[in-house]
Length: 152
Ligand SMILES: CC(C)(COP(=O)(O)OP(=O)(O)OC[C@H]1O[C@@H](n2cnc3c(N)ncnc32)[C@H](O)[C@@H]1OP(=O)(O)O)[C@@H](O)C(=O)NCCC(=O)NCCS
Image 1 (tube, rainbow, N blue to C red):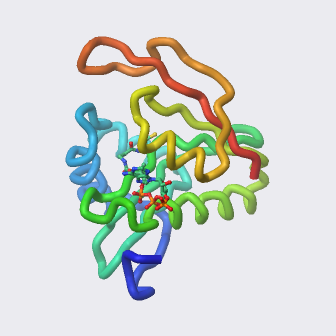
Image 2 (image 1 turned 45 degrees about the vertical axis):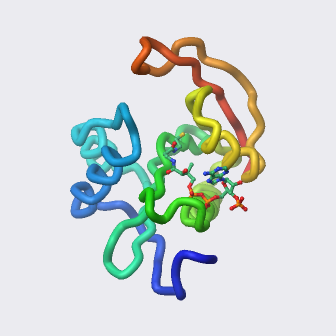
């Protein structure tokens, strides 16, 4: 752990976190989720997590459960804190929470061009199980998604 001297914790993402989460979202992505989508995820009761350090959110993971699958929809580390283990902490906390809720696997989609995220997921033990053609909007039009899976 390189990003903190134990001065951090992972906890449930709540409505009060939306402003910080949406600010980071816009800093990180060229095509960010809208504030409305983030608000709907909270209103729908997704069990999403944030990693907080010294009162500031520096990462978040948005996910939901469907039958026995945990669907990871978004995981982000604030740019200044990337490469320091934040997303690794968050995703480990998600695995534990999902297992406690009876989930047996994690599924996700990732942009085919997002090499950093794909590398992160491979390191986490995810395998590529499919391709969704033109799944994402992109600046050039549409972009494919890799579908990845990891057993819990
Ligand atoms: C993908 C992302 C969440 C990783 O978060 P992070 O906190 O930087 O990740 P960690 O520090 O826990 O990194 C763990 C591993 O991921 C890989 N990784 C992370 N950043 C990397 C980079 N810039 N280049 C190459 N590999 C990288 C490495 O394998 C790393 O392990 P290592 O440090 O032992 O080499 C972060 O880059 C991010 O927020 N990206 C923008 C949002 C995004 O694309 N999210 C995924 C959407 S599907």
